[in-house]
Length: 443
Image 1 (cartoon, rainbow, N blue to C red):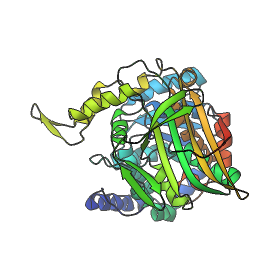
Image 2: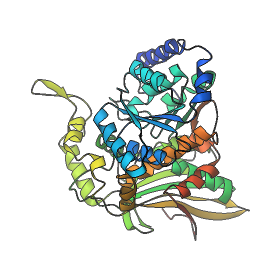
Image 3: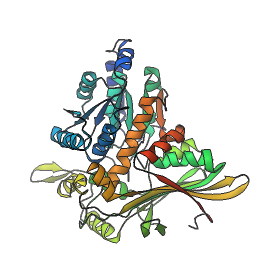
Image 4: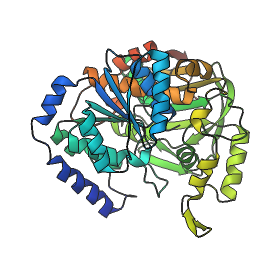
C-alpha cells in the first residue's frame, strides 16, 4: 500500500539532466533574502498538492491543528476536487482553506503557485510520477518538501529512492529539507522500526512489515488507492533484503497465513515495498527485511484475468486511431477510491514484527496500529487506507513546521527521533500497541 541513490537506472539521462539544469536556472531567480523574509512571516503556511483521498485526510487533520497549520492551500489539476474537500473541511472543522489549480508535471506552473502562496512547506500528495517535478519547484523556490511515496517513472513500473536521494547535495546547498515517505507504509512502519531500535531491542536481526486491510467495500473489484499505482505495485516481482543482498521472486508467489488482531486470519503475500530500500540503507545491521500484504481470493482472481487480457499493460496500444495505455483506461472505469468511504466496513492492521537482541537475550516484538474504516469516514469522509496515509503526512509536516525534525538535505523518516512522531500518532487517530511475542516468526 504505497503511500507512492545509487545511480539513475530507469530514468532517461537526458531528461534527468534537463530537470537538474531547469531547477538550477530557476534557483538563480531568487535573491538571498527571499527565504529569510517568508520564514519570518509565514512559518505555518502549507501548500498541499493532491486532492484525492490522502490529500483530503491530510487537509482535514491540518485544519484540526490550526495552532500548527495557520494557513492551508490545497491544489490539484482539477480544482473542483479541491473545492469539494474545502467544503467538507469547512463543514467539519469550521476552517476555511484556499484552493488552487496546478499541473504538477509543469515545473514553471508549480513554481508560480509556490511564489504566490509563499508556503513554508510543500506537501506532495500527488502521484509518484510527479515527485521530481515538485522537488525541482521546491528547490527553485527554496521551499521545504514532504511526500508519502517515492518517485516512479510513468513509463516504467519501477520505483526506488535513487532519483530523490540524488537531490541531497542540492537541497543541502539550498538550505532546505525534504522528508521522504511520510505515509503509513512507507512512513509509520519505518518510524516503528526506529522506535523498536531505540526502546525495545539493542539490535534488530530480522524485520517483517505486515499490511492487512480487512475492510470490505462491497464492490466486485476496486482498489483502495490510485488503481494505476496499486496494480503496478501488486504485479511487480517480489523482493526482500537478506544477508546483504536483494532476493527476487515472481509476484504473489509466496503466501503465508497470519492471524491479525481484530481482523482474523488472512492470506498475506511477500511483496517489494519502498521502505525496504531505505531501511536496509539506514539499518545495515538488519539481516533480513520483508514486506507482506493481504489480498482476498476474489481480488487476485480479478487481477489475474485483467493481466491475462492485457488490461494491466503500461505500454501504449492503438485504439480507434488513438494511443491509449490499457492500465490508464482501466483506472478510468474502476470506482474512484475516494468514493469507497461510505460503503467500506472493517479494519486495517499494519505493523512491524522485529526479532533481535535485548540485554543479551533474543526477543521478538510486534508494534502495530488498528484503524477502523467507519471511524475514519465519520471523522474525515474517507476510508481507512486514505486515513492511515493522510494522518502521518500531517504529522510529518507538523514535525517539520515545529522544528521537532530539522535538517538540510534529503531525509527518510527513520533518520529522525521517533518519539515525537509516535506521540502524535496516539493523539491524532492512529494509536499503536506493543506486544512481545513468544517466538520469532516461523516462516
